[in-house]
Image (cartoon, rainbow, N blue to C red):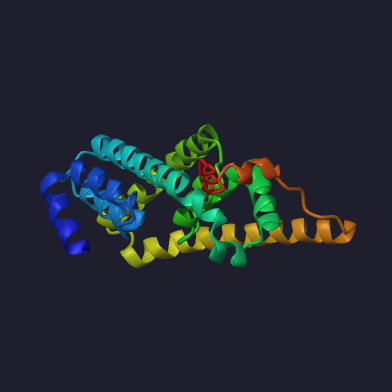
Length: 225
């Protein structure tokens, strides 16, 4: 897959970047860094334009994430009332998570962009639990202003002989590790606070969850005598 993308990138430049990123929005397992860093390498070699590539990468990342958010919001939420799902996640716990998503969902989305492997689950959770779209769009738009130039910049430095793909992976992994530690510390503080006060964690209103119950069949009309 990476070889095919490299060939397309050499021939079509920014358009290949844009289309490849859109494919990630429908579940194609092609990492964002796998798409953008090689584009940065070609920018460094002067084979494709920097501004066009940056615009294509930014637009592609946003649209792909919006697509995945929309798919999870539309088709994922009805799964909440499936029996097998209720056995895994109790409705009370789900409402607690919904409450936290409403309060801290923006920061979850922002941090997930820097933690390897967490981008897709964070977007899925935002869609299924109905994080307001304007909050999701704000978090995505702001965080991509940092991640897209970072990945393009790593590719550019590789082209200038200042590093390798392994170096780029190491930099992204270190940033992700720092954010994972920060997220764990915040989660531990939240858990200890509720445990100390011995109070149930706050929950979203149950009316939100009831909206997605499957419609029951209406009773048949009584037969006429």
